[in-house]
Length: 303
Picture (cartoon, rainbow, N blue to C red):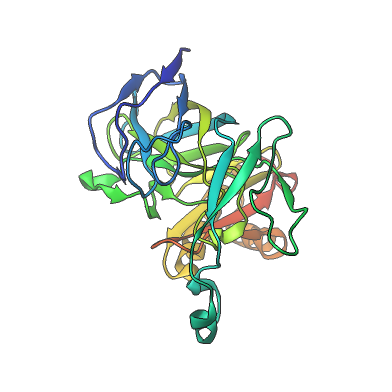
């Protein structure tokens, strides 16, 4: 297995079938540095306009339509001492009658302490003078080329991944994506220092990271929507609008996973999901919303 240090020379605001920026073997590891959601790098130089410029695509030898790309997020190291967020909740998450009363949207700066691995507001807000958060890195936008040669904006998401903004997409998580193009053509970017469920201010704490991932091919996979696994949980992802459709995609994918890998028929899976499932909101800001259907692994036994 080879370690590649990938330095992008261009960035993409769509995920699609582009000539590879890097070609690797199945199982190789890639280290790369991202720009933030507006295209600024670790030195504050804007390399690309937004939304969410992506590194890539990375061609993984042997990946073909009908396979799955296994993405192991090995590490994320912040490369800048600042990040930024929106300052007001989205109009989509409050009652319509109060939308006009919301303050004007603006950008707020956060400081990132790379020694203590914490983040805090650069200018304290009344009531939050001692508001310090632990660094909780996550990749906001990543995926593989969509089917039929489509090129889809990094502002949204679908079966191929994309701008899902789910907080569990961080170090220690393994993700599976359905391959639709030769080589998979993997993209990543839009990294956050931390973020709450839903990305309800339109951003996480947007900043730059050095990201290390291992990319492997799993042949003849049946997955339709992204799947993930952490030390303690498995989860499936649905991306769509309205939110109930995203939940339906995620639940359908979980039922399929419980059948194929855990030997549970629909009745058994229904009993399990009915009592111990957890639904997490990844994103309710972008054109497609993201829902995660999550189960603790302690309830499961692989067949």
